[in-house]
Image (cartoon, rainbow, N blue to C red; front, side):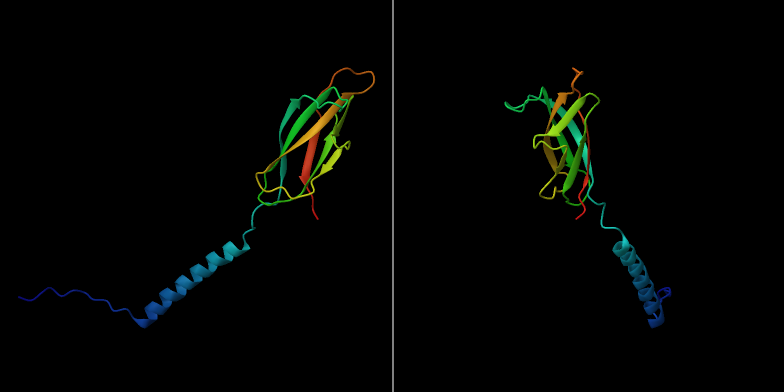
Length: 139
């Protein structure tokens, strides 16, 4: 008894080369997209918390706050923060300045605590936490 004849296909060298060329084109397109894709966002900073704290002895302010600044971006960078006091108040970092610039880069997802002292101006008796804006330092 004879076996039914099976259809056999031979891999023609032209077909093999066509498939390899197609695979190379697809791989080239994927590599082009990956290489041209931006490497992630730059550094970005967000104030993630403002908490009232007891002022250390000798600060001379009726209220102090700890501000948490977090690098929410994907790259390390130095940070510059500027205080904006609420109406009827003054606000300074413990250094005595209304602005702070970090000496070292803050890594992604790292949080930096900053201390702020607040005082009421003449004619005002209410102390309110300041606003703070932080941005990456571009060297």
